[in-house]
Image 1 (cartoon, rainbow, N blue to C red):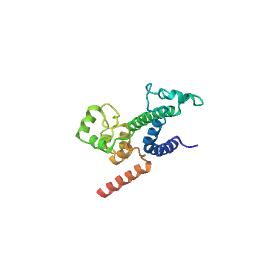
Image 2: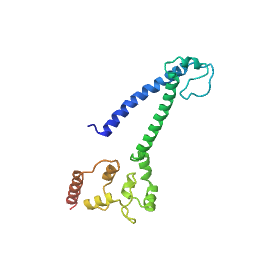
Image 3: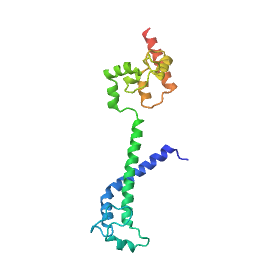
Image 4: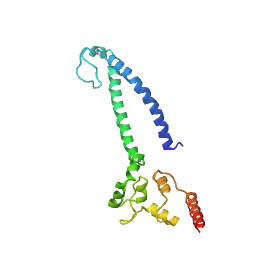
Length: 194
């Protein structure tokens, strides 16, 4: 069974290719659809609603097998589909942007002096703020989030290493091998200081 994310990505890649073709061909097809309207452009009863295009088209439409003006129907359907396509893309874009990590520009802005005020006024994790991410502090009077406090305690330090906080903020995993490497490095430094 295909993973849903892989299936969505494959469909989006296919849709992107089709949209590129549709975008290039749309002006010609749109013009041809307009030109194919029965009686076009001699007059009109107003915008089409799936019926015949204009007064002079009544005779032409009456001679169709089922009385359907296919050019009008296709034009109306295409117009509706293109509007729905835009709406769906806009909705998906909004949801995806809401769940992406902050941009580099936003990260830099968070790491400024204003970020220090943000942390103290709204009680956010100071370590995450330094790498341009926002996480609530563990306690009302605390300066670190739960994850950073636990990491600092595990490593025996006051503040967690910022490179690990940065990796976490970017959605990357922090493994026991990463922690063991830091512990070994700290132990090596202590021996060289003696």
